[in-house]
Length: 141
Length: 141
DNA sequence: TTAAAACTATATATCTGCTATAAGGTCAAT
DNA sequence: ATTGACCTTATAGCAGATATATAGTTTTAA
Ligand SMILES: [Zn+2]
Ligand SMILES: [Zn+2]
Ligand SMILES: [Zn+2]
Ligand SMILES: [Zn+2]
Image: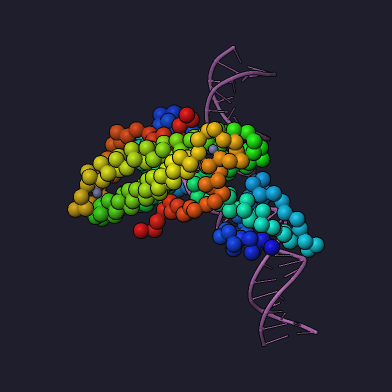
């Protein structure tokens, strides 16, 4: 199967497939005499795996790591589970950061109604005055 | 004051200041004879405003819009408040997406303990099997 | 006085995960 | 013969910086 078919069957752009190949996430397929890439079902499964990882918001580096684990199937799967735990904490710290941010924004929003002119806007005043603390999106825990 | 001093006083990198200037968020300052940028307190306030907006995770485009509002101080501040409301809904939809993701990840994680080998890992099996639905990080509401 | 350290300038590359465009080669049908 | 659909590579763009390369300037100290 050629790249367009593979792309359609998995629901990605052909560019994305070539991109994954360049990144080392998909093995370079054989080529026809004219240079066209030829894929088999293995490639399809591999690509689908990558896409499902991306749906889980795993980074390409994390996916790469998972693939390395799959290449050594007899080691303990604790490494896989640890990777997932780490990723869950990535996601949780993002959530926490965003929730703190939301709180800040809502309180800022409450400092103004719509009946003023810009020069007296409570929101702008709140930002300009600035008793704010930086967010930390990711921690290296 | 030169760029290094300004950078230190606001707590950003000098590169970041030049970057904001290129993006049109900071007005180009006067130059010394040797070409060095010279800043005054106005620049400092403007830069600090930008940084506080960034802490609130406002995009550079949103900040730009706020600046345009500030340039027309007699219009109704409803536009400012609307911008903030939009941004709050950006943040909320990010939170919702991440929470849905967290749920998926936690359930995936629960499908494995650490006592297997990679070939039998419940996490990898869960990803490979793939009964997953794509996330939508942002909606164009 | 001179040489090194610290600062400034511009231009360019890097990061993430794609997506889009340009410019061209290949193939089937008309 | 030419259209159209497909394929190839190379390159640029998005956000929001950050890093590097290379060069000129100022300050400090030996
Ligand atoms: Zn992660
Ligand atoms: Zn207002
Ligand atoms: Zn926003
Ligand atoms: Zn496992």
